[in-house]
Length: 161
Image (cartoon, rainbow, N blue to C red; front, side):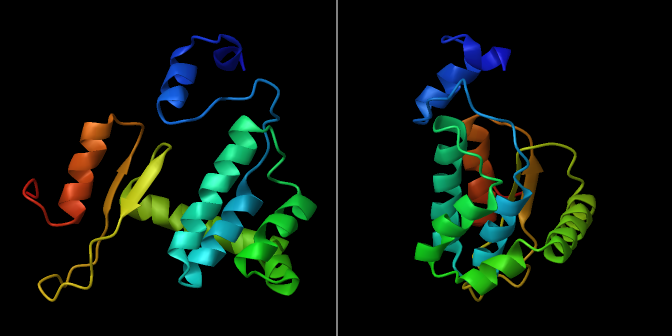
C-alpha cells in the first residue's frame, strides 16, 4: 500500500491519466467471484455488458474501496445487468469457481501467460478473409503505443507480420 500513500507516486500518476483516483483505504480482496460474473456475461454473448461491468468493478474496487468479493454486494450489482439470483448463485458456487480456475490455468498455459495484466484480442471473425480465430495474446503492462500495435495486428492492419 506504500505506492498508494504517496500522492505523486508513479502508479497514482498513471491512474490519473486514465481517470482513476486510487483509494488509500481499500482492502485487498480476492476477485475470483467478480471475475466469474464477468465471464458469465461474456459466455452469454454480452461482451459489451461484461466490459461495462468490469469498468464498474474497477471503480468500485480501486476508487471506492468496495469489497468486490462480497456476495451480497455482487448480487446487487448484477441484477440490473440481467443476471437473476439463480444464475448468479451458480456463478458464485464453489464448483463453478473451481471450474473457472481450472480453465484459467489451462488458457494461461496454452498462451504462455506469466504475468498480469494479460490481454487476449480476438480477430474480427466476421471477415470472410479470416479463418484463423487465434487471438493476439500478450502479458504485462505496456505503453499505449504497444497496445495499439497489438490491436492493429488483431484487426489485420498494416503492422501484421
